[in-house]
Image 1 (cartoon, rainbow, N blue to C red):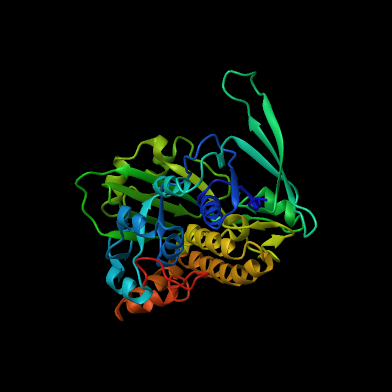
Image 2 (spheres, rainbow, N blue to C red):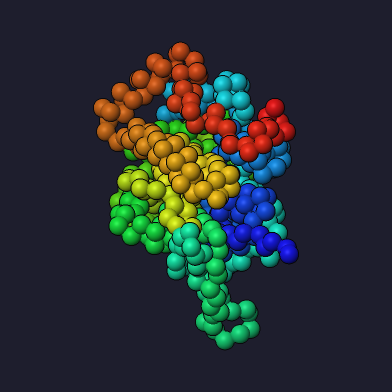
Length: 405
């Protein structure tokens, strides 16, 4: 008699959810991904992948492909709004220290490549999922799904379905409904005190070093991609829920229009509709566990953090391959991931307090310290990523993938 594969339902079709589904499929699980959006067009312009996430992608068999697709984030550093360098970074030193580079690519590219790893029919969009029962050792977990009716049917009509699974993965983001169902007493995500803007634009002929610029309560980053586009982002301390009185490009011009090159050129090439703005929320209070019964959390649903270390998506990809490794032993997944991600999230909060500092005196001291430290070379700054970027996944076979031997 043929044994049916164990079933896994993944709620959320972002980077973490797709990576988890791909890793579970690789290990023989029958996977279904439920994404409430009508398509997989990702919110977010680009993503930075550190060596730790690239090693996790090696487990999925696409690490080298992503390295080839990505822009290699070369030498750059931190600057002041007037253009003075506070510190310089070295891609060569980072690669030597952590065994690989830091690379940058569009989120759409990564999402598309992860989705291509899934079997036909595994991904269902326009599907809103609710965790009805987390399950336990004696019964499967249950998910209630409502899906938009096909085009041409009655407006507003939906189809309802209940799915049972040996594993439910909550990868539904910072405001996770699965997290609320598993841990209703947890306070959830809180406002981190600042908002972000992101843009991905063509900027032919532009030449500049990759950089992040720290002002008073404001930051800006500009990074070239391999395909000729530029990824730019900004952040500022503002009240939660605020919006520009006209449009977000105009807001960026008011806040950053007089900053150093290439900031004005980037803003000139940006269309108002090309600016994404989102308030930053994080889990200030860690969860007691990342699992309950047969249900588990990963990515922002488990450990939403400020983007100041660039590790949010990286940790979600780590979660995915570790979850697949411990899929039949969820307490081991919690024991593996909760201490690590909690420590990284707290470090991201500390960095946010530093680079979003708004006082004139505090900013002056910060800049002076950064300038002094930069005189010792890039190694001192790289120490902040020790224990993060040099992470390696738990290969069940003990064999390293191609490119990491």
